[in-house]
Amino acid sequence: MLGNSGIVSGWFGLFGVLIYLFVIVIAIYCLVLFIRLAHRGIKALDIYIEEKKNQNYR
Image (tube, rainbow, N blue to C red; front, side, top):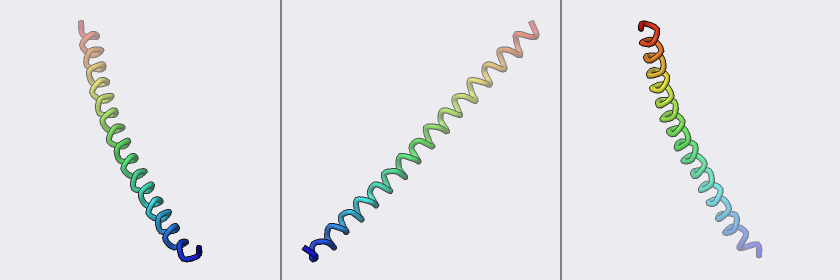
């Protein structure tokens, strides 16, 4: 049984690395989504400010 412990710990090590890479990929994906959301929000605020600015001059 002691001979197999190296193989088992090797699989758990590989599994840990895969989880780590998965978390990094998900974090990068969430960052991209957040940046896209912020960009849309800035555009919406620009449109809102422009509409309010034009309303005041009428």
